[in-house]
Image 1: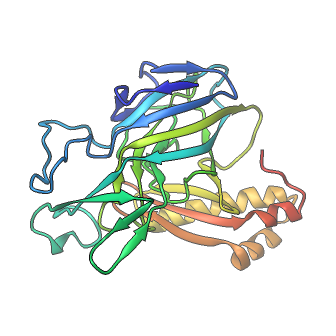
Image 2: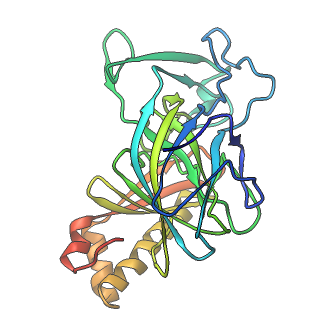
Image 3: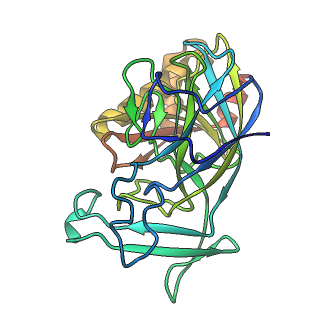
Length: 299
């Protein structure tokens, strides 16, 4: 099985990045990932980290998929996510929904034992590992790994988990897939600016879909299909995600836009993925049974 070491990382998703590895359509690949702090925080007493110039949200890759060409869709099946035995959280006085509450950065290191985190003497939490940064190289200028956009990137969607399938646009030859910024646990919104940040390994199967029309980034996870969109404001991101799903559902319903709109108001859910990145991210979910009822099979 092909493995990409965490020595191959970047802080920008760019069509000019040199591939770390090459694979074929349908191959299974393991990505070793660093945490979002680039491994710089090793002690709670040093919340600013030990590296003088750590990468921001380092992403492992890129992976060149033979046969992937601009206009294709890259299907990424998340087969497994294995995380390290401890995760890190850090407050921020400059970003997050309530950053004004903090006047300095404070770090906490949480051991993980049997998939459990002892938050304090009263509360134990079960981890639910997810991928924060996952994307292809944009067709235009490169985009920093801290930013989500049409190519995927730092979407921080906590439904990108083991067993899910993510569909991304192919903007350049080979797609150039990269990923990182794992979280052992994160709530919708990522309101304090971080989840339980952690290093680990992600096993994926990559497939190139030709002549496929999907509202990318598009996610199938835990019985639901989601459109994921990012914009400067939540209002913009929410409208974009809803419109993408509406247009897609209208095709599934053979152009019946009245039924598509009514059905979305009855059965779709809009959720905030994150509010802390340079662009905000929203997803709109529909149960898979809706598509199945109309005989549509997501590829």
